[in-house]
Each structure stands twice: as structure tokens, then as C-alpha cells.
Length: 327
Image 1 (cartoon, helix red, strand yellow):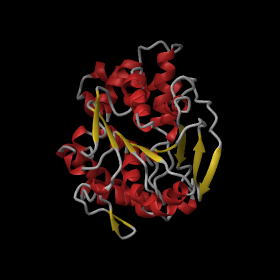
Image 2 (image 1 turned 180 degrees about the horizontal axis):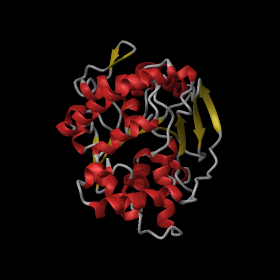
Image 3 (image 1 turned 90 degrees about the vertical axis):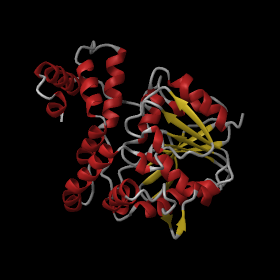
């Protein structure tokens, strides 16, 4: 991929590869312990971040671990919110083990997410990140959520540009036979799809990292984030099929034709406050694909920087806390 992006520019390719080697050799490893588990359904659990306020369930994407919301002691949206009059509860999809491998996307919602959240037993707010927001919208009506925050959430998949949709389609077709044989789509096969959405950005970030002081806080932050990006449990075959075929290819959500347990998912029928946070420099979830309902909050940030970047507390954390506290 880097060779294609650099297109014969050997100097640029050398810088990018030097950055990849520097990342691979870096000794930093995330050591934050997981927060207490307060509920479990199959291999999926709910983790409690404390705080004395109303509960807010955070639904992360299935594609990477949930740790981007709790990246480091000094860079954790969830730990910060627990001191802001809220009680964050994190859905941890876990290893997506044998019980989950038989599930498609609808079953993951109805047999895992819904019972896990319904077991809380009191009104909750929902916050979803990336595809976690798409999933949160699918179950919001069933649990009578009090309010919903969407962070970089795709809904209108036909609004990805043509080149991006074609890249996803090619990748889905190429990986499907191997995913079937492996009984899951591992991150090693999934990650190149995201590279294809922003290949220039991947080359640029590694070229820049190659000259960063490895002992610096900046280097540790880069490695922590890149480790998260390259980690994740294999996606169940049925979930991957529904993601690629029903959402990206057919845009069932955007067309109002996505059905979960026989019922159409129609966010426009939700009579609750919705905050739709859109990152204008997002290459993974373009701004045009956002839901387009409720209050839209645009940020001058990228897909991941909106959550963990140096300006994230001012850009996202504080307005999100105000919304979730109903201020």
C-alpha cells in the first residue's frame, strides 16, 4: 500500500517505512486495567467507570477495541466524564468468541446489546462512536433512551464518495472466502480497508513518526493510538457480511429499509434529544454520511482526534458532558 501511495517517490517511501519500523520497535505498551464488569451477556460485558450521576451507556464500534474511549490515564474520555456528574458505562465487545461467531449484525443487537443495556433497570442515555453509534440508533427505541449522542457515526452510507465505496466493495469481495474459511474476519484482513479510505494519511503519519523522539510523550501517544488501531477481535462472518452488503453496499439504514427483529429502524421517530457530532476532517466517516437529525455539532478534527487529540477536551468532551447532563 505504501509503495502504491508513494508512486515511485523512493525518498517518501523510505521515510514512511522508517516510521513503520520505529513504531514496531517502540517499547510502549498500554497498561491501564479494565474497569469493573457489572453485567455480561455471552462474551459481551458492561464496564462501570463510576461517578454519581445518571448512567450513560457508551457503545463503541465492533471493529476495534473500546479502549480508544479510555486510552491512557491522562487521555480518557470515560474517566473524565465520571467526574462530571455522569456515570459512564462501557459496552466491551470482548473477544467475540464462539457464541458470538454465529451471530449476524441484527442478532448481535437483539441477543447481546439489547439485553445487556435493558438489564440496567433505569433510564439511560446512549452514546455511540463510529459504527457503535449506528448500532445505538438501532436499539434506542427498544430501551427508551433518554437522549442520544452520536460521535462520528455513519448512517447514509451512499454518501461515501464513489472511490471509497468501490474500495470497500473490492475489499469485501477479496476477503470473503478467507473470512469464511477462518470463521471470522480478523483485523489483519479488515485494517487494509481502512487504509484504502485514507492511504495518503497513513503514509504521512508514519513518515512524520519516523523523526519523532522515541522517548517523548508524543511518541508514546502515537504508539498507544496505533496499537488500538491495529487491535481487535475477529469480526463474525455474519456481522461482516451485513456491514458490507446491507450498510455499505445497499445503504439500508439511509434508505429506511434496515430491519432489526422485524421492525424498521427509523431514527426520525425517536422523540428524544439527539446530538450528532461530526468531524469535518474525518476520512473514515465523511461528514456527508451523518444522520442529519437533532442538533449537529461540527468539529475541526479527524475521526480519532476528536476523541483523543490534544484539543478533544475542549472540542468534544465538554460539550458532550453538557448535552448528557441536559444543560
